[in-house]
Length: 600
Ligand code: ADP
Image 1 (cartoon, rainbow, N blue to C red):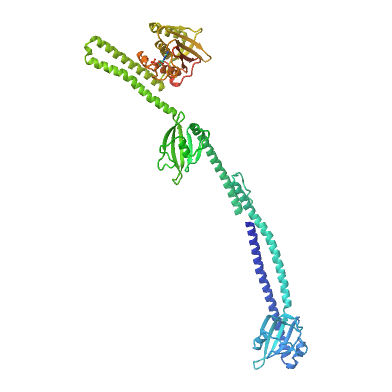
Image 2: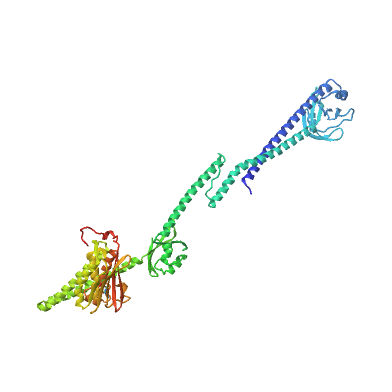
């Protein structure tokens, strides 16, 4: 891996190497130049000495002798005198001729009257060994100005070379040691630099894996230290944000899963994103796992609902699931770029609402129907009267009494409807008192006896063996008892036996009215408490019933926190039972006793 550490070490070593090579080369070259300058000086001085001591004031033939006498304190320096043709005529390298002949660039310069120095010239010495020489040629001019002699001095450069080699070796060793130290230092330096970076990298990796609970140690105050503390701050901030987001998510999930409306969300490709518990319950599925088109097909929702609903804000559809009615609102949702992201479906169980709606419609139809019949009768009799029947007093009286009873009928109907409407609107006020039922029932039964006797029925009340005190509104309780006793008389043939009696259990006193009348069939029994429900419409109407009596009685019993139930066997008889709680009931506010106030 080309890590920063190795890059740094390489850079460090490269730098040291360059510096050392440049400075080493410079040192070596300087040293060499100094050495060469020194040698040149020595050669010049020696040449001048030869001119002074040998050539000046001496004959050419004495040159060799005198040259031998010149001494130099520098080892390895050779002195030669050459004539103007460049031939050696005296030399310190040999005692007698023949002398060594030289071919050197410096000599040629000297022959041209120019003193010249040359270095690095390779040539053999007097023993025939190839050596490197530094040489100096100095022309000696005659009085005429022509070059007469050339003093040629030379020096073996190998000593200087070896000392330079020694220096090179020293420098090379120094470079090697410097490199080693640089490598060690570079490593340590890179380590201190990359250590925190590696720690940061590891921290970031951990963070990406979701481990946000970490804090890195800040070891220095430099940029990396600042980066580390920024990283720690970022981690803390992320932790905070994440916990807030997850809290928010939890809250939303709790809301979503506890709301009574069903929520289903589909992505733009129709894939199911989420469905809450309420949605699964409403759709009666164990686990919602259908995509959009499957959902549409399963519940047979075809009316204009598409995944891409264009610009339509939302669409409401109602569909049945078993016996329930579900209303679904399809709303597309968009991202900030206004591109459709998917569809949210909100489901509501509207079964109750639909039932109420249907009931309301049925009720209105019933009321209209109930009012229309007497109105039609009144209208037709009035017309007949106006057309002349008025003149026939007997017929007129008969018609008028029919009109009167139809008007009564309508008045009863309106009275009953009003009473029901008060219960519906919770406008009924109950004047709750303690009622002793033995006495109360005895009176009520006595008042109804006359009607029973008219049909030769026996109506009796069996007093209970101890006082029975219930809490109720006298008028209302009387209304219920009367209604039930009247019904028993009405819906029983002659000779029937009607018994009123009291029983009790732990929580209720039960007042029952049992007749041996026509009874109610099993299918009709659960419906007799419904408004306008009559088993035999003609008979009921003939007997002045509105079909609302039991509905009102039931409302009254419920407003007393009691119940009204019916048991019956078709053709044998019916037992209606009123249940009164033994404890004084906590009535709803609207039903509370208001001192001195009206009872309705
Ligand atoms: P109605 O004004 O018709 O009497 P109710 O609400 O009092 O209306 O009664 C509803 C229906 O229940 C009656 O039409 C009748 O068919 C049936 N019913 C009530 N009481 C009895 C009973 N004791 N025996 C048989 N049928 C009864």
